[in-house]
Image 1 (tube, protein in one colour):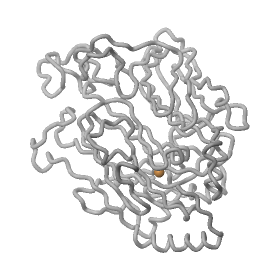
Image 2: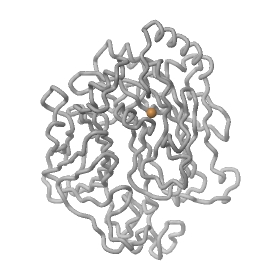
Image 3: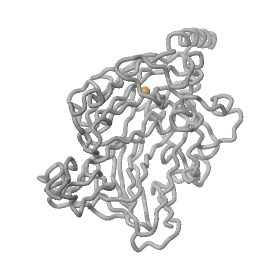
Image 4: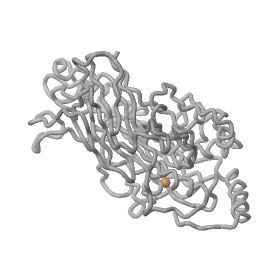
Length: 457
Ligand SMILES: [Cu+2]
């Protein structure tokens, strides 16, 4: 974004124009979501994701890139950018333009404005699937002077070329009221995330990122006679029956019983306020004062509600958060509050729990600490930790380099796959927190910040 200051009258005039134009031209977005060819011609492509079902291998999601508001744990609200899930419940087929599910065209502006979620819609896919994500750009309501593009950058994805990489210097970026359908062939399981790459320092500071991971084929079980569950008539390998694994590990060493994504993000309140108030953005002076897990600071992290209540009527009225939006209700049963994801770790004694940890901070290297429950780190950057020379599918797993620790340090853009082994840990509640002590607060409130609870039952 290039900062442009307008007199207020100009801002008001452009707002009126924008809304007048938008209500007519933006009532439909084009969603690209091809049908699995096996629906029409069974067997033409076969079972790409090896789950035993041949016609479920094409997955689609439709998100809007827009703005919104987040509530900090100390009661301060911050203006944000974000993505909102507007996937039709009945996916569009072919190139037929579809309206958003349940959203009458006349309500389109109300549905979209200030709808950005924090984090953006979580995406879970299976290795082998074909994945389409359509990104539509809905302009910023309080900032009609801005005309920023947005993109989807699938961080860590081995793109064959730059076209769908989302780096604006090298690929397409949909402008306001435009849409772009991205396509990915999911070949590598692991923990990723996606974020907007336009003016990345600004748009990521403002909140445009989401959890994303790809489940391995081994979840369907690996055959006793070789890798792959396509024909396991000879039985499953005893070490890798159908279940939940982080990777195609070949030996069951990344099996887990429960999982959550844990995205560590930080906000600079002064920067967010300056963005809302049309003031110069101090990139050089960026100093984040809020740390959140999945968009919430402690104690909101352990609020089990999938929707964060805020009890601020002015906030609710201003952001339309008191009124459920049809698109939100259709997609996740929630109304339009932005911070939907708790990060409580609930686990039975003796079980293994997976944390898909990522750091999306634009300013800080962060350390996650688990003093009581040992961490076993099995992967980073969507790769299992093992010696060079091991086969990519894990069949010849070579020497594993999993390691045990009580803390994990990662800079922005990194991911760790962490297994919490609860064997021998007494039942109880334990803390999981960042040991960057300035982030164990919510700005001026000296409790909270980057902390959640591990509850062993
Ligand atoms: Cu953006």
